[in-house]
Image (cartoon, rainbow, N blue to C red; front, side, top):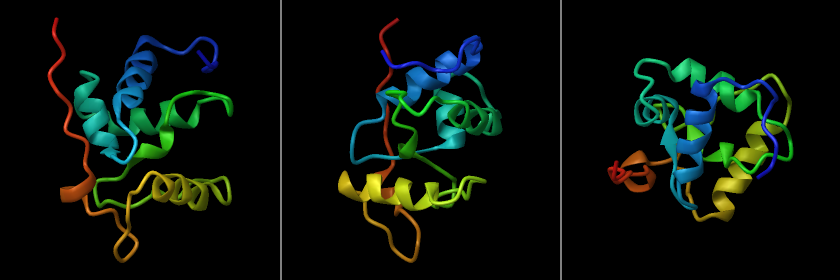
Length: 113
């Protein structure tokens, strides 16, 4: 498994586990990832966790977008274009700069416990 930041918290590990479950060609919102990770109302924490990933991580961070279906602008230039290109390569389409969530939102199955 590729490296995540050393010392990442249990919350970060849960977030990364959830994001790894998002299949190619599907997206999830930050809030959705938080809820599935049993971290309700922690969408911002999801953003922090994804921003903390190492460049060689196997977590498909590009599949997480905001609640409007848009790619959130980051401080690092060009990452938004990379994210869009990665999503389009998986078959995700954009309409007026947004992913139609009704069509591409991930619908996770309940995990057997």
